[in-house]
Amino acid sequence: MLGAMRQVWIPRKGSPDVLEVREAPDPTARAGDVLIRVSACGINFADILARMGLYPDAPRLPAVVGYEISGVVEGLGRGVTGLGIGQRVIGMTRFGGYSDVVAVPEVQVIPISDAISFEKAAAVPVNYLTAWLMLIKLGNLAEGERILIHAAGGGVGQAAVQLARWRGAEIYGTASPDKHERLREAGVDHCIDYRSNDFEEEIARLTDGQGVHLVIDAVGGTSFKKSYRSLTPMGRLFLFGISSFAPSTSRSIITALRGFLSLPTFKPIPLMNENRGVFGVNLGHLWNLADQLSSMLGEVCGLIDQGVLDPVVDTAFPFTRAAEAHAFIQDRKNFGKVLLTPD
Ligand SMILES: NC(=O)c1ccc[n+]([C@@H]2O[C@H](COP(=O)([O-])OP(=O)(O)OC[C@H]3O[C@@H](n4cnc5c(N)ncnc54)[C@H](OP(=O)(O)O)[C@@H]3O)[C@@H](O)[C@H]2O)c1
Image (cartoon, rainbow, N blue to C red; front, side, top):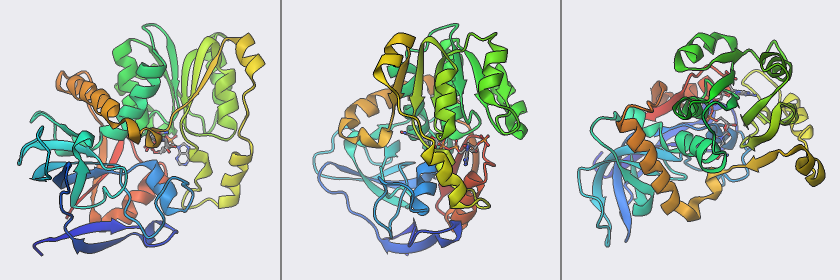
């Protein structure tokens, strides 16, 4: 229907099956906004948590979530000068990305080259910005340093693997065992099956007790403590999520809550004496610095155009199969990014 967009809604908290496709009037581009016809939108783990009612930053339900989209500019609000109708772009939507048309402030929109597909482009903003903040901006990962990437087969994980390889680091990655072969092909030097082995013991064994210089950990629970203990002096630990807080489609919420209760606190004196750093990263709390995010995204897109980075897309599910897409991530089946496409 002309003028009626389709969106994937979370009407209430619950299992993936609650997701439903609804129609709504097309948005209009207000002053400073860019109207984009969406080709693909990224699904993030935060969306899964939002659907389960476990994400404090999520909008109140019912809501349409979705942080990122790719598509074509269809309209320009008053005052938009840097973009033109028909241009291929990516947009950081914060919420509302699960839609076939979005209106986004110009500062959150980046032009993309013809060399990148819309699907790969929709996999870029959240994964690469999060990995860039940790490995490059704050972590300053150097050639020859050892990095431990948890969930290395996931969306952020794959972006981090590619940035670490570009920096010339030695890469240790945890993942479910069926992902190890693809991880090796992607450049992970040491794959760790954290589900059958203790990753802290594995890191100690593989590094002759030296530890790693940088860890990125969004698993949470007891994992944060183990990651911290896996650092070498001058090592940096990045905390950026609590996946273990999310029950799988077959695990109870009580099991997940246990992990939440085992979160560590970090004390100043031991941090000083051990010469280690602990950083927190939450991209969702950097929206007031959208110009800086856009500039980092521009650098990432430049590296994609040069062939240094190559976004990994697992599956693009049509809107009508959004429930399957959420279950796919929650059940740890994805390798790289999972997307939704208007159908
Ligand atoms: N702070 C930020 O700004 C920010 C931004 C983006 C993402 N994040 C966080 O980063 C993490 C990864 O996000 P993503 O979107 O890239 O997801 P993802 O890694 O693509 O998907 C989840 C993967 O995490 C692994 N995992 C480990 N423990 C898990 C558990 N208890 N339940 C389910 N999966 C588990 C699974 O892989 P294996 O089975 O192979 O381990 C699974 O495939 C999430 O915690 C997310 O909230 C934070």
